[in-house]
Amino acid sequence: MMLHTPVTDILSMSDVRGGYGDADVLHGVSLNVADKEIVVIVGPNGAGKSTAMKAIFGLLKVRGGTILFNGTDIAGWKPNRIVQHGVCYVPQVNNVFREMTVHENLEMGGFLSKGDLSAAYDRVYGLFPDLRERRRALAGNLSGGQRQMVAMGRALMLDPKLLLLDEPTAGLSPKYMEQIFEIARGVRDAGVSILLVEQHAKQALAFADRGYVLAAGQNRHEGRAADLLADREVAEMFLGG
Amino acid sequence: MTFMDLINFYFVPGVVLGSIYALGAVGITLVFGILRFAHLAHGDLATFGAFAALAFVTALGVSVWVALPLAMVAAGAVAIGLDRYFYDYLRERPKILTVMASLGIALMLRAIVQVFWGVDTETYTRGIVRPESYWGLRIRDRELYTFVAMFAIVGVLWVFLQNTKWGKAMRAMSDNPDLALLSGVDNRKVTMLTWAIVGMLCAAAGFFLGLNTELKALMGWTMLLPMFAAAILGGVGRVEGAVIGGLIIGVVEEMSVLVIPSEYKAALAFAILLLILLVRPTGLLKGKVL
Image 1 (spheres, rainbow over the protein chains, first blue to last red):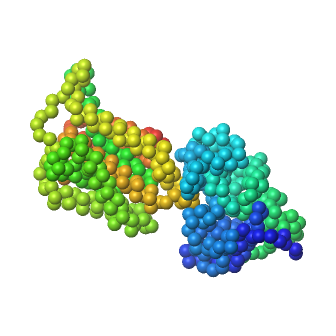
Image 2: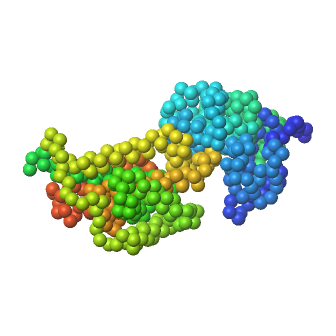
Image 3: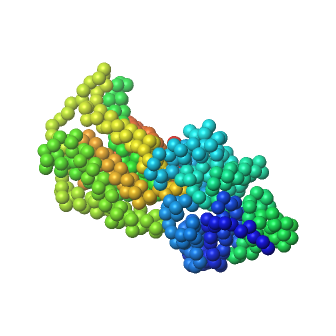
């Protein structure tokens, strides 16, 4: 299969092994994300999708392989150092400060920024106009979709080059799911590469540029999202027929 | 007994005691919210602060109002030291270990106070202070200062938490510690800052208790239960709740003497604590569930 050959890979993860405690969850995962590309990781429960993402962000022990971000091996780095290098991560759950306002959530996202944040606020509120209106509301009082916007907005405050989204549509209605995908496209168009993990594999592949199917902690399939959607085996085994 | 007697002899002392509890309860609620354990050395840190102020008064000959900020700084430094040399080693272990360690620290702090200052009761100033009368309301100056100072100190803390970068970082750490770390908030700095503030609040609580009563080695320890009751009553993690809780516990304790023998006053905080845990475990203002 002819893969979309990226000119520059912003992220290149090869043969990564690792897990929580002593047990490995990832048994050699490799994936690439090109500049301004949206890449989705799909696969059955327990395949190691979220784990792969956490490995990139330094949230678990990587025991083998390399994770190159812009050519630098970031495997084993601490999350706050990775953040400063331009990778931001949105966890699946508990991804906002509930007792803080929308604006304060964004401010925390920009915590590591030394300078003035006003340009960053404008950029994020430009992507999420709804949030500008509700910037004094407590994040915990927002709807699920708006809360997800706050979570993404917080992660975008430092102007990352790569955004990691762990199941951004989990628990959202189809209407909000479309909205989140729409926003993610807008973020990409603003120059940010996106790697996301999704349970809603079909919808996610319909929206992403490329996809990886993981199973049992290893790569199973990869390719252009449209090709994966059209692939019989992938469809039967992983997309529910 | 007239209404003014009730106010003068029970309500006013209740508010004063409540203000002291409030200063302690705010610290307890900060430790619980941000560091997530019950700090049992809180009362004895207050004792230390009270005696530190006494040391400044006697050794430097300064007024108590100069001694208070000095004692606050000293207790803040001691609190940072306690964290660095004791609690920090238990950070990754189950929290109950830190709770038990803080009980040990409580005994240690009390022993240090007893070694340096002896076991006799002390006072900051000698002589009897007569209350001033304001339209029938009889208040001593020191009682007024206690109440005003409590609001001033908590007010400054409130502004700090709401409006400054590091104050917000403390709230973020209390709200969602994992996300705070993902955002790049340095939890070691937040921890240190929290202890500095907690130590200062402890010293203020101990100082005002000493100013209104007398200084003795057990003064802080006996305040521990009402301070915890106040923090939980107000809602754990809620600064404004701790103030309300402190004032309620103080007033209820003083008023209770009217209906139950004063020997049971100390048990009252425990009764309120049990009641709130049974009826509304999140406290009056919605706090964290214990």
